Amino acid sequence: MTELRTPYEKDLRRNKLPWNEYPRPSLKRAAWFNLNGAWRLAVSRGTKEVFCGKCTVPFPPESRLSGASFAPRSGDVLCYERKFTPPRAYKGQRVLLHFGAVDGPATVLLNGERVGEIPLPYLPASFEITHLLQEGENILTVTVWNKGDTSLPWGKQRKKRGGMWYTPVSGIWQTVWMEAVPQNYIERIRCETEANRVTFRFQGGGAQKTLILQKAGEALEYRFEGDSFTLTLPEPRFWCPEDPFLYRFTVLAGEDRVESYFAFRTMETKEVGGQSVLCLNGRPTFFHGLLDQGYFPDGIFLPASPRGFEEDVLRCRALGFNMLRKHIKLEPELFYYYCDLHGVAVLQDMINAGPYSFLLDTVLPTLGLKRGVRHRVKKATREAFFAVAEGIQEALFHHPSVVCYTIFNEGWGQFDGDGAYRRLKAKDPSRLYDTTSGWFFEKESDVESHHVYFKPVRLPHRADRPTVLSEFGGYSLKLAEHSFNPKRTYGYRFFEKAEDFRRALETLYREEILPEIGRSGLCCTVLTQLSDVEDETNGLLTYDRKAVKVEEKAMQALAEELQAAFTEKFPSAGLEK
Image (tube, rainbow, N blue to C red; front, side):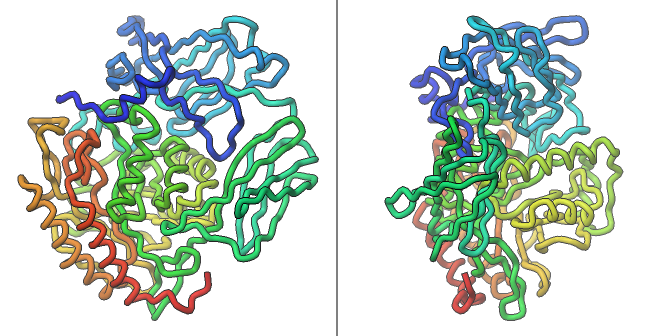
């Protein structure tokens, strides 16, 4: 494989520690202690130690940026160790230890004493370590069991990577950090908006609180008691891709001080002219999107610095798109903050658990069998799927950019879609849910979702649900100097010249997508995809993010044509905000 380097590796050389940006924008304190950097890593296989050396956290050991470049096998045990001395200011404070994500299950020890367990992959975990912290040097140990099977949510990882399956990761793969908090501290803030009201719900922090809201250049101060406070704002600004307005605020609670933000945003379906349509803030909205896998050649699950995520978001906007479908992966919170900040809506996939069947999940649907297929999924796998899915809902509730969830993609690990829809919708009704993206349709879903790759786009018309083309395209243009795998290429239609690739994309949109807006009421499209990934060369960006295969002005013109056709079909005039 070719060693590809992204522009973001320069940030690693400039910063003392990798990913040295506060990792939780939704609840931000002034000071934090970054535990990223060089850790000792020992990997055991049975009774034999198969690797012992340095690993740069937060990059998984399989990645080049980790410095380990070692791929653990199923059943291996990874033992991470890092020595650190806490800041003097931590003395007399409560101290919290945070993990962005560990490909668990994992056990955490501090100075040989048990801190806690991280049972599931992808989700953040936090522990109080005040009672275990020593003055001077401390030893933090994280032991990870690399199960490497499909009983836990696994996404697009595969032991034998290739095609649409990618290099698997193991161990710690997001930021590890500590922060000191007062004895009574704010553990969580939940902002719930409705019409022109916002309700702040607090966990922890004592009875007396002060909220300072930044509004139109002023700092408006509100004092209140208790764990909730409702504020009415006349004529609020609503968040949308064209105006991604965020209300920023600070909360003082005793000795604790945190910063956060919220946005007014609604997401629902409405009938307009006899057709159900997606409505953002009460207005019919066309979501013009890209499939986003979130992989990078140097860090695999992570870019070299957060700037990699932010520039993906900015390039999405620059090319005329207003949405990313985050495909079967939960990212660090900073990614969703950038989407909030820059106005990119997110269609977030849940992460599949259970086995994938090439015959059932790919061959038969391609031939036209898209209903009536059921998978046998073990009870423990179902429980793990829901635990992670509900954890994703909890982790992303704060972010206005997240407007819709995909529950099952193309049948992968699919079971009882209707029951899953009811369960997840009840937990967070502020988002829409695509129960079965692509095929194996069941009864309950907020949208009618289709994937079309190998034939012309011609979607069935269904008046009672919004029509969503949640995957299409997959056109491949391989640029040799930016290619991960010189020998193999994966895509659905292949081009050797950039001008042919661009012309074909424009033809696809103008001759197949535009007519569907008027014919089937199409209101959401997801082109495969934002960037190349390993063997896949069907991205608008190369895998190293150094080349853009399309012309910005041409893509913006396409976006304007799509919006014009949608506005003609579904006029927004007369609908309330």
